[in-house]
Length: 335
Image 1 (cartoon, rainbow, N blue to C red):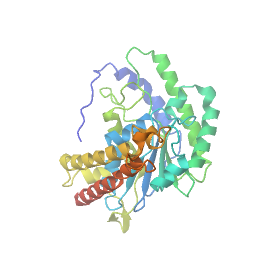
Image 2 (image 1 turned 135 degrees about the vertical axis):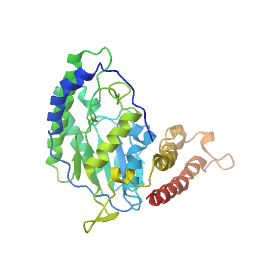
Image 3 (image 1 turned 120 degrees about the horizontal axis):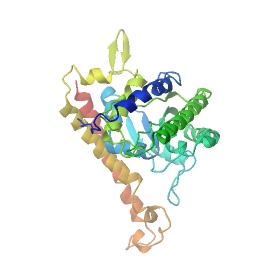
Protein backbone atom coordinates (compact mmCIF):
# COMPACT_ATOMS: atom_id res chain seq x y z
CA UNK A 1 0.00 0.00 0.00
CA UNK A 2 3.03 2.20 0.03
CA UNK A 3 3.18 5.07 -2.43
CA UNK A 4 6.22 7.07 -3.42
CA UNK A 5 5.56 10.82 -3.55
CA UNK A 6 6.69 12.63 -6.66
CA UNK A 7 9.26 15.30 -6.05
CA UNK A 8 8.90 18.86 -7.19
CA UNK A 9 12.05 19.93 -5.43
CA UNK A 10 11.81 22.99 -3.26
CA UNK A 11 10.35 25.24 -5.92
CA UNK A 12 6.86 25.01 -4.39
CA UNK A 13 7.91 25.96 -0.85
CA UNK A 14 7.15 29.63 -1.43
CA UNK A 15 3.81 28.75 -2.99
CA UNK A 16 2.86 26.54 -0.03
CA UNK A 17 3.64 29.38 2.35
CA UNK A 18 1.59 31.77 0.23
CA UNK A 19 -1.43 29.47 0.34
CA UNK A 20 -1.30 28.47 4.00
CA UNK A 21 -3.31 31.43 5.22
CA UNK A 22 -5.95 31.02 2.53
CA UNK A 23 -6.32 27.29 3.12
CA UNK A 24 -6.57 27.76 6.85
CA UNK A 25 -9.51 30.04 6.18
CA UNK A 26 -11.11 27.58 3.79
CA UNK A 27 -10.72 24.77 6.33
CA UNK A 28 -12.88 26.76 8.72
CA UNK A 29 -15.44 27.82 6.14
CA UNK A 30 -17.95 25.17 7.23
CA UNK A 31 -18.87 23.49 10.46
CA UNK A 32 -17.33 20.16 11.42
CA UNK A 33 -19.10 17.20 9.81
CA UNK A 34 -22.09 15.83 11.64
CA UNK A 35 -21.53 12.45 13.32
CA UNK A 36 -22.06 9.74 10.76
CA UNK A 37 -22.49 6.05 11.55
CA UNK A 38 -22.33 3.26 9.05
CA UNK A 39 -24.75 0.43 9.74
CA UNK A 40 -24.36 -3.30 9.29
CA UNK A 41 -25.02 -4.35 5.68
CA UNK A 42 -25.03 -0.77 4.37
CA UNK A 43 -24.79 -0.48 0.61
CA UNK A 44 -22.77 2.65 -0.15
CA UNK A 45 -23.20 4.20 -3.59
CA UNK A 46 -20.53 6.63 -4.80
CA UNK A 47 -21.63 9.31 -7.27
CA UNK A 48 -19.65 12.09 -8.91
CA UNK A 49 -17.17 12.72 -11.69
CA UNK A 50 -13.82 11.30 -12.73
CA UNK A 51 -12.18 11.43 -9.30
CA UNK A 52 -15.02 9.30 -7.92
CA UNK A 53 -14.71 6.89 -10.86
CA UNK A 54 -11.01 6.54 -10.05
CA UNK A 55 -11.78 5.78 -6.38
CA UNK A 56 -12.72 2.25 -7.41
CA UNK A 57 -9.48 1.84 -9.37
CA UNK A 58 -7.41 2.91 -6.37
CA UNK A 59 -9.52 1.35 -3.64
CA UNK A 60 -8.09 3.30 -0.71
CA UNK A 61 -11.33 4.67 0.71
CA UNK A 62 -13.06 1.28 0.54
CA UNK A 63 -9.96 -0.29 2.08
CA UNK A 64 -9.88 2.02 5.08
CA UNK A 65 -13.63 1.81 5.73
CA UNK A 66 -13.58 -1.97 5.42
CA UNK A 67 -10.57 -2.26 7.72
CA UNK A 68 -12.21 0.03 10.27
CA UNK A 69 -15.55 -1.80 10.17
CA UNK A 70 -14.77 -5.39 9.18
CA UNK A 71 -17.89 -6.96 10.67
CA UNK A 72 -20.32 -4.47 9.15
CA UNK A 73 -20.18 -6.28 5.80
CA UNK A 74 -20.31 -3.01 3.90
CA UNK A 75 -20.98 -3.15 0.17
CA UNK A 76 -19.67 -0.46 -2.16
CA UNK A 77 -21.19 0.34 -5.56
CA UNK A 78 -19.51 3.00 -7.67
CA UNK A 79 -22.07 4.74 -9.92
CA UNK A 80 -19.85 7.62 -10.99
CA UNK A 81 -19.14 8.60 -14.60
CA UNK A 82 -16.33 10.63 -16.11
CA UNK A 83 -17.62 14.09 -16.95
CA UNK A 84 -20.52 14.01 -14.50
CA UNK A 85 -21.46 17.36 -12.98
CA UNK A 86 -24.58 18.48 -11.15
CA UNK A 87 -25.69 20.03 -14.44
CA UNK A 88 -25.33 17.00 -16.70
CA UNK A 89 -24.91 13.25 -16.33
CA UNK A 90 -24.80 11.83 -19.85
CA UNK A 91 -25.62 8.13 -20.23
CA UNK A 92 -26.20 5.66 -23.04
CA UNK A 93 -29.64 5.15 -24.53
CA UNK A 94 -32.02 3.42 -22.10
CA UNK A 95 -29.58 3.66 -19.19
CA UNK A 96 -31.59 3.49 -15.93
CA UNK A 97 -32.50 6.68 -14.07
CA UNK A 98 -30.78 7.58 -10.79
CA UNK A 99 -33.82 6.35 -8.92
CA UNK A 100 -33.73 2.95 -10.64
CA UNK A 101 -29.95 2.61 -10.34
CA UNK A 102 -29.94 3.27 -6.61
CA UNK A 103 -32.92 1.01 -6.06
CA UNK A 104 -31.40 -1.82 -8.10
CA UNK A 105 -28.19 -1.85 -6.04
CA UNK A 106 -30.12 -1.48 -2.77
CA UNK A 107 -28.26 1.69 -1.81
CA UNK A 108 -28.76 2.82 1.78
CA UNK A 109 -26.05 5.53 1.72
CA UNK A 110 -25.14 7.89 -1.13
CA UNK A 111 -21.71 9.53 -1.04
CA UNK A 112 -21.68 12.45 -3.49
CA UNK A 113 -18.81 14.65 -4.62
CA UNK A 114 -19.40 17.57 -6.97
CA UNK A 115 -18.16 21.13 -7.39
CA UNK A 116 -14.64 21.16 -8.78
CA UNK A 117 -15.43 20.88 -12.49
CA UNK A 118 -18.50 23.09 -12.06
CA UNK A 119 -16.38 25.86 -10.55
CA UNK A 120 -14.53 26.23 -13.87
CA UNK A 121 -17.68 27.98 -15.16
CA UNK A 122 -16.93 30.90 -12.83
CA UNK A 123 -18.80 32.62 -10.03
CA UNK A 124 -21.69 33.58 -12.28
CA UNK A 125 -22.80 29.92 -12.30
CA UNK A 126 -22.89 29.44 -8.50
CA UNK A 127 -26.65 29.91 -8.18
CA UNK A 128 -27.29 27.46 -11.03
CA UNK A 129 -24.89 25.04 -9.37
CA UNK A 130 -26.73 25.17 -6.04
CA UNK A 131 -30.12 24.78 -7.72
CA UNK A 132 -28.95 21.79 -9.78
CA UNK A 133 -27.20 20.19 -6.80
CA UNK A 134 -30.35 20.51 -4.70
CA UNK A 135 -32.47 18.84 -7.38
CA UNK A 136 -29.93 16.02 -7.68
CA UNK A 137 -30.01 15.49 -3.92
CA UNK A 138 -33.80 15.21 -4.11
CA UNK A 139 -33.33 12.30 -6.50
CA UNK A 140 -30.63 10.62 -4.43
CA UNK A 141 -32.54 10.76 -1.14
CA UNK A 142 -35.60 8.87 -2.45
CA UNK A 143 -36.13 5.75 -0.34
CA UNK A 144 -34.91 7.26 2.94
CA UNK A 145 -31.27 6.98 1.95
CA UNK A 146 -28.67 8.76 4.06
CA UNK A 147 -26.61 11.31 2.17
CA UNK A 148 -22.98 12.13 2.78
CA UNK A 149 -21.73 15.09 0.77
CA UNK A 150 -17.99 15.48 0.43
CA UNK A 151 -16.37 18.55 -0.99
CA UNK A 152 -14.16 18.75 -4.07
CA UNK A 153 -10.40 18.61 -3.70
CA UNK A 154 -8.40 21.75 -4.35
CA UNK A 155 -6.63 22.55 -7.60
CA UNK A 156 -2.86 22.22 -7.84
CA UNK A 157 -0.69 24.65 -9.74
CA UNK A 158 0.45 23.37 -13.13
CA UNK A 159 3.99 24.03 -14.41
CA UNK A 160 3.92 27.23 -16.38
CA UNK A 161 0.48 28.22 -15.12
CA UNK A 162 0.09 31.83 -14.08
CA UNK A 163 0.02 32.17 -10.31
CA UNK A 164 -2.78 34.71 -10.64
CA UNK A 165 -4.87 32.32 -12.75
CA UNK A 166 -4.21 29.50 -10.27
CA UNK A 167 -5.19 31.56 -7.22
CA UNK A 168 -8.32 32.81 -8.99
CA UNK A 169 -9.38 29.23 -9.67
CA UNK A 170 -8.93 28.33 -6.03
CA UNK A 171 -10.82 31.39 -4.84
CA UNK A 172 -13.70 30.54 -7.16
CA UNK A 173 -13.74 26.92 -5.96
CA UNK A 174 -13.83 28.10 -2.36
CA UNK A 175 -16.94 30.16 -3.15
CA UNK A 176 -18.61 27.07 -4.63
CA UNK A 177 -17.74 25.05 -1.54
CA UNK A 178 -19.07 27.76 0.77
CA UNK A 179 -22.33 27.99 -1.20
CA UNK A 180 -22.74 24.19 -1.17
CA UNK A 181 -22.06 23.98 2.56
CA UNK A 182 -24.68 26.65 3.24
CA UNK A 183 -27.17 24.78 1.06
CA UNK A 184 -26.49 21.49 2.86
CA UNK A 185 -26.84 23.13 6.28
CA UNK A 186 -30.40 24.13 5.41
CA UNK A 187 -31.41 20.59 4.44
CA UNK A 188 -32.50 18.09 7.06
CA UNK A 189 -32.10 15.23 4.58
CA UNK A 190 -28.31 15.57 4.33
CA UNK A 191 -26.88 13.25 6.97
CA UNK A 192 -23.36 14.62 7.06
CA UNK A 193 -21.03 16.90 5.17
CA UNK A 194 -17.30 17.14 4.84
CA UNK A 195 -15.92 19.97 2.78
CA UNK A 196 -12.21 20.33 3.45
CA UNK A 197 -10.42 17.52 1.59
CA UNK A 198 -7.24 19.48 0.98
CA UNK A 199 -4.33 17.11 1.67
CA UNK A 200 -1.67 18.36 4.06
CA UNK A 201 0.53 20.83 2.21
CA UNK A 202 3.85 19.30 1.22
CA UNK A 203 6.19 21.07 -1.16
CA UNK A 204 7.55 17.73 -2.41
CA UNK A 205 4.31 15.90 -3.13
CA UNK A 206 2.07 16.07 -6.18
CA UNK A 207 -1.51 14.96 -5.52
CA UNK A 208 -2.96 15.32 -9.04
CA UNK A 209 -2.22 14.14 -12.56
CA UNK A 210 -3.02 17.45 -14.20
CA UNK A 211 -3.75 19.99 -11.48
CA UNK A 212 -7.37 18.81 -11.44
CA UNK A 213 -7.72 15.01 -11.16
CA UNK A 214 -6.15 13.10 -8.27
CA UNK A 215 -3.30 10.67 -8.84
CA UNK A 216 -2.86 7.50 -6.77
CA UNK A 217 -1.02 9.35 -4.02
CA UNK A 218 -3.77 11.96 -3.92
CA UNK A 219 -6.48 9.31 -3.66
CA UNK A 220 -4.68 7.74 -0.74
CA UNK A 221 -4.28 11.08 1.04
CA UNK A 222 -7.93 12.03 0.53
CA UNK A 223 -9.12 8.61 1.74
CA UNK A 224 -7.25 9.16 5.00
CA UNK A 225 -8.81 12.61 5.33
CA UNK A 226 -12.31 11.21 4.87
CA UNK A 227 -12.10 8.34 7.35
CA UNK A 228 -10.43 10.39 10.05
CA UNK A 229 -12.77 13.38 9.65
CA UNK A 230 -15.87 11.18 9.79
CA UNK A 231 -14.78 9.79 13.18
CA UNK A 232 -16.51 6.46 12.56
CA UNK A 233 -18.65 5.53 15.54
CA UNK A 234 -20.49 2.39 14.37
CA UNK A 235 -19.59 -0.45 16.73
CA UNK A 236 -16.57 -2.71 16.40
CA UNK A 237 -14.84 -2.49 19.76
CA UNK A 238 -15.61 -1.40 23.30
CA UNK A 239 -14.08 1.97 24.21
CA UNK A 240 -14.97 3.59 27.53
CA UNK A 241 -18.11 1.49 27.69
CA UNK A 242 -19.22 2.37 24.15
CA UNK A 243 -18.95 0.37 20.95
CA UNK A 244 -16.93 2.28 18.40
CA UNK A 245 -15.40 1.69 15.02
CA UNK A 246 -11.73 0.92 15.05
CA UNK A 247 -9.86 4.16 14.57
CA UNK A 248 -8.09 3.48 11.31
CA UNK A 249 -4.66 4.85 12.10
CA UNK A 250 -4.61 2.97 15.41
CA UNK A 251 -5.74 -0.16 13.59
CA UNK A 252 -2.84 0.11 11.16
CA UNK A 253 -0.12 1.29 13.52
CA UNK A 254 0.91 -0.32 16.77
CA UNK A 255 -0.89 -3.57 15.90
CA UNK A 256 -0.04 -6.77 14.09
CA UNK A 257 -1.52 -5.45 10.86
CA UNK A 258 1.19 -4.58 8.38
CA UNK A 259 1.35 -3.18 4.85
CA UNK A 260 1.28 -6.66 3.30
CA UNK A 261 -1.99 -7.51 5.07
CA UNK A 262 -3.59 -4.29 3.94
CA UNK A 263 -2.34 -4.72 0.39
CA UNK A 264 -3.86 -8.21 0.19
CA UNK A 265 -7.17 -6.72 1.29
CA UNK A 266 -6.85 -3.87 -1.20
CA UNK A 267 -6.14 -6.28 -4.07
CA UNK A 268 -9.34 -8.19 -3.27
CA UNK A 269 -11.24 -4.90 -3.29
CA UNK A 270 -9.77 -3.98 -6.67
CA UNK A 271 -10.73 -7.40 -8.08
CA UNK A 272 -14.29 -6.91 -6.85
CA UNK A 273 -14.40 -3.43 -8.32
CA UNK A 274 -13.27 -4.66 -11.73
CA UNK A 275 -16.09 -7.19 -11.73
CA UNK A 276 -18.57 -4.51 -10.70
CA UNK A 277 -17.36 -2.08 -13.39
CA UNK A 278 -17.66 -4.70 -16.14
CA UNK A 279 -21.14 -5.63 -14.92
CA UNK A 280 -22.49 -2.12 -14.52
CA UNK A 281 -20.77 -0.48 -17.50
CA UNK A 282 -20.39 -3.13 -20.21
CA UNK A 283 -18.70 -1.85 -23.35
CA UNK A 284 -21.41 -3.30 -25.59
CA UNK A 285 -24.33 -1.57 -23.89
CA UNK A 286 -26.09 -1.06 -27.24
CA UNK A 287 -26.59 -4.82 -27.56
CA UNK A 288 -27.55 -5.22 -23.91
CA UNK A 289 -30.20 -2.52 -23.48
CA UNK A 290 -29.51 0.14 -26.11
CA UNK A 291 -30.52 0.48 -29.77
CA UNK A 292 -29.18 -2.87 -31.03
CA UNK A 293 -31.22 -5.31 -28.97
CA UNK A 294 -33.01 -6.50 -32.12
CA UNK A 295 -29.79 -7.50 -33.88
CA UNK A 296 -29.45 -11.27 -34.48
CA UNK A 297 -26.16 -11.28 -32.56
CA UNK A 298 -28.04 -10.03 -29.51
CA UNK A 299 -30.33 -13.06 -29.55
CA UNK A 300 -30.04 -16.81 -29.23
CA UNK A 301 -29.40 -18.22 -32.70
CA UNK A 302 -31.61 -21.21 -31.85
CA UNK A 303 -34.50 -19.06 -30.62
CA UNK A 304 -34.56 -15.45 -31.80
CA UNK A 305 -37.20 -14.63 -29.20
CA UNK A 306 -34.65 -15.27 -26.48
CA UNK A 307 -32.06 -12.66 -25.54
CA UNK A 308 -28.97 -14.39 -24.20
CA UNK A 309 -26.91 -11.29 -23.35
CA UNK A 310 -28.86 -10.03 -20.26
CA UNK A 311 -28.80 -13.55 -18.83
CA UNK A 312 -25.04 -13.79 -19.38
CA UNK A 313 -24.43 -10.47 -17.65
CA UNK A 314 -26.24 -11.62 -14.51
CA UNK A 315 -23.51 -14.21 -14.00
CA UNK A 316 -21.36 -11.36 -12.73
CA UNK A 317 -23.56 -10.98 -9.64
CA UNK A 318 -22.52 -14.17 -7.79
CA UNK A 319 -18.88 -13.45 -8.71
CA UNK A 320 -19.12 -10.00 -7.11
CA UNK A 321 -20.86 -11.40 -4.02
CA UNK A 322 -18.27 -14.15 -3.67
CA UNK A 323 -15.46 -11.62 -3.82
CA UNK A 324 -17.18 -9.53 -1.15
CA UNK A 325 -17.32 -12.54 1.15
CA UNK A 326 -13.56 -12.95 0.66
CA UNK A 327 -13.07 -9.29 1.54
CA UNK A 328 -15.14 -9.53 4.73
CA UNK A 329 -13.39 -12.72 5.81
CA UNK A 330 -9.92 -11.26 5.35
CA UNK A 331 -10.90 -7.96 7.01
CA UNK A 332 -12.24 -9.81 10.06
CA UNK A 333 -8.96 -11.71 10.36
CA UNK A 334 -6.88 -8.53 10.59
CA UNK A 335 -6.08 -7.87 14.26
